[in-house]
Image (cartoon, rainbow, N blue to C red; front, side, top):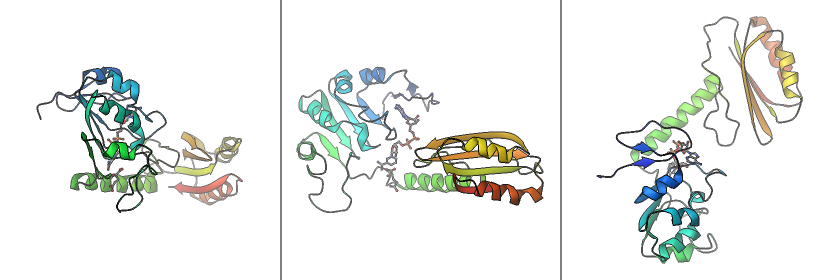
Length: 250
Ligand SMILES: NC(=O)c1ccc[n+]([C@@H]2O[C@H](COP(=O)([O-])OP(=O)(O)OC[C@H]3O[C@@H](n4cnc5c(N)ncnc54)[C@H](O)[C@@H]3O)[C@@H](O)[C@H]2O)c1
Ligand SMILES: O=C(O)CC[C@@H](O)C(=O)O
């Protein structure tokens, strides 16, 4: 399209083509004619673009958001478009989206600024269809299937949005007498002491634990485990008062 592409991310991302990463969001905003958003909905990205960011953008710049509805403060965007600071916007996602098809569901009861937004002449609004391309659906299918396979075969929960994200480097099932312990438990004090006491007759090669709200997830690779010990290990973990689910991979 003949554009120069710059991008900002909280982590260093390898550049594609001749695009360039910039150090700050402000730098990106001050240099861009079109600003597009590709971040998840988190507490850090809520209203990532709001009145101060629109003020920091070039006069007559455009905003495109097909990521998540909470990332743009749409009331502030409406004001920035009315003043002419922002020349136009294309939005695919909204803080509250209609739960079904039908007329007049996108109204002020759903989002207080809905009628003001839809009355503007310089917006393109689409109903959360950004992912409805063959390529995106294919990638989503591969990503979901790989995530589930990794969880089932290795215990890795990386990418989960409602569960602690835990992973350990590859499981070496060729190594004899090794077991991977996967233990989902209540997020309360004293669990690691109890679990490590159960594991302590073996060699703990590596271990990782994380929590999300009330739930925590521990992964540990232990070696020097006789096959005959596995049932007892499983039963001891299952009998702990904090247990939600236990799996042993071997
Ligand atoms: N409209 C749709 O139909 C549709 C379809 C697919 C995906 N999405 C959404 O689009 C968004 C992006 O998707 P993706 O596949 O590119 O995600 P991704 O996980 O590949 O990339 C997200 C990037 O955002 C970065 N990031 C996180 N917090 C940040 C912050 N505070 N500031 C700057 N960068 C930050 C991450 O480091 C990561 O590189 C997601 O929210 C996704 O759910 C929408
Ligand atoms: O459309 C889909 O199937 C995937 C969902 C995607 O649009 C998203 O918003 O994350």
